[in-house]
Length: 421
Image 1 (tube, rainbow, N blue to C red):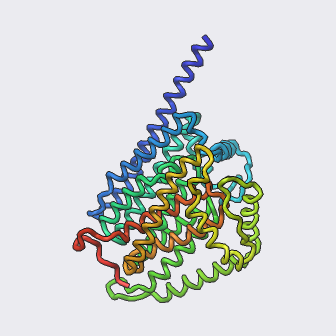
Image 2: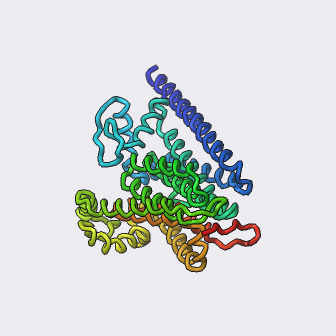
Image 3: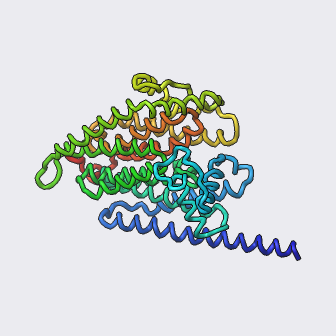
């Protein structure tokens, strides 16, 4: 009887987990559809329903595959266990320590831990897969936001290319399904790109609202990313103020001047805050003390001068490693696919940026500022190519969007007009 009871209990838990997953799928599907419908009403040439559906399906299948095959489960790493422990500690009112993550931590954890805790509170003992589905939904919303921003910058064809490319980009597909920070930060990046496009193309105040939400999201998860997004936002606003927009074709020089002052002042403050540079240096030293086949070349960032002079070395390692001959296990071998795709995208971006310089400086500045900001922030925060591969997912979002904006139009009359400068 006890064995029979355990079987029934196991079946009940399985059915409950399936029910929780179905409810999450419906909720996330409604969210994605609502965002797509709301933003697509005034953009008749958007038409990204198919790539968005593919993006969701690819991520769900990937998460299901890595959950179903025991030999693949270790590829996700150990961070998920930590975050689930933090979420359960939050539910039980246990202080868990901040770990240097987010600026908002009533009982220790960062925002993502509270999101997981909320889902566990709603569904209880329903396993982990419904948590993955929620993260996937947020990642797909980010794709929609980026594609809409590209529509505003370069037209419908570029937006559709962006949606298709992001739908199948391997690192985005894999990391969107983790119980981790990445999906929320992908959403923050999408919000910033969308809000930045609104500010850049029309100086719409609502764009500043999206930017503010993006920066706050990032600050509550990875503060250094929030600072980077804030710097990108100031650069976008400053550039937008120099453009002649609106019915009177006026510039907003006061806006530009204020943003430039804030950007320069903020950069100087960060570079001269000894504790910030010391924290970066301790992080770099920790990687060098635990060397591995994916450890990046150690750099000295203890002073502003050292940081600036050593940054190119770290950028090269962050963007291009791990090299195929460095991988040492199954998890790292999976990374070769994503690294190869990253190389192709970066090479394509360089070629297009040189060939289409005018488009780069007229249509793409919000994406360029986003790319530069997150690349520098993530490069300085990691000394390990394995972690860097996960971080590079956020850089590749901007790279994919830039490639599609710069892609030559097949039919010039259908292309979006180049925005006025």
